[in-house]
Image (tube, rainbow, N blue to C red; front, side, top):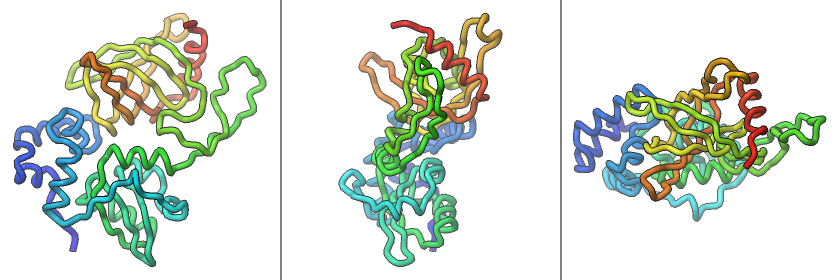
Length: 275
């Protein structure tokens, strides 16, 4: 029998958050997407270990440390990367028709149903840390980026064939160091920053606000008017947050949606910058 209670209610009952904090997280989720636990962890309302311990003790879900687990390729292949990333889960083992899946939120019935539908297996959920799941996705999901056979060898090789997946926004294509002004919304305000490097797969930029992992963000990229008369809009997803020690954060974001011609314009401009 599936459990219908929500993770927010459980965190409140165990004294980890207040109803006001849960309401704040739900409002953020409605505006920017993502998972409420990602928001709560990012803003230091709860810890990953606190969430995992709470869910494990409340419902008896076993905890599985992914960094010590070797996952067979045939198990990884059962679940497409888009499902693993959208629901922050990782398949780890299959015994007959039972698929063991480590999840940041094992109470997510929708995620379980989607995995069961696509694999034809019954899911046995385990509790895992979001950071461990992200690392496992980076380690086990390989992506082939087609080599377009660029004629001009001086141009930045934007596409390179590789079976080594180095992170959702950090694949083995050349990343160009470039300072390009950007704007993005945070808590109903527009913040200004600039990129540190760019590629066709994503951006690295600095922020004074921590952004929840998994959140979708609309970036406005300002290139010179002579190159593009208006700011370029791109939808990105936060996949990496690194504290810098000065109350600022490096944000790694993968590209989700941008017109091809606009992406080419950004790369062309970035390639002209000298450092």
